[in-house]
Length: 105
Image 1 (cartoon, rainbow, N blue to C red):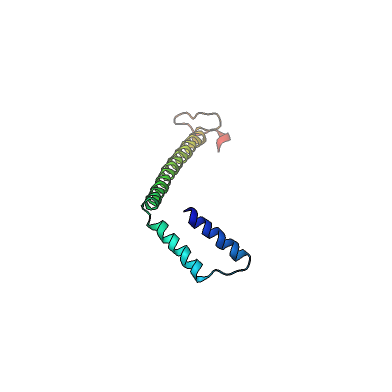
Image 2 (cartoon, one colour):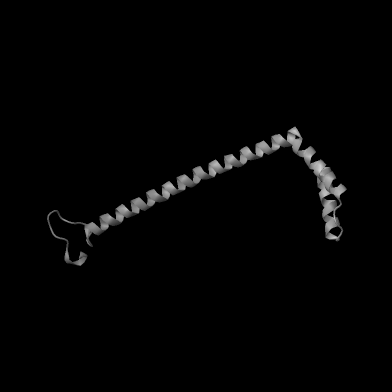
């Protein structure tokens, strides 16, 4: 990995100074990259990274689902309290069988 990183830095500096990358340099870089990709430990690291990202995605979805549920429940409770106040009228109560007082119309 260190050799690959060193090669990348060298080629980057070379390009920045206006010099092109030769076919031999490109082939050497591709060879290093192939060796890295085929390394069992690198494969294991990549698999662990994929599994970790998937776990983070599932945790985030679970949290977002709970937040949405809580927000919906809070809206529902506010809506019920508001509807009860509107039905009760301005004095906070409504007698059975009586019309609402004049102020609530």
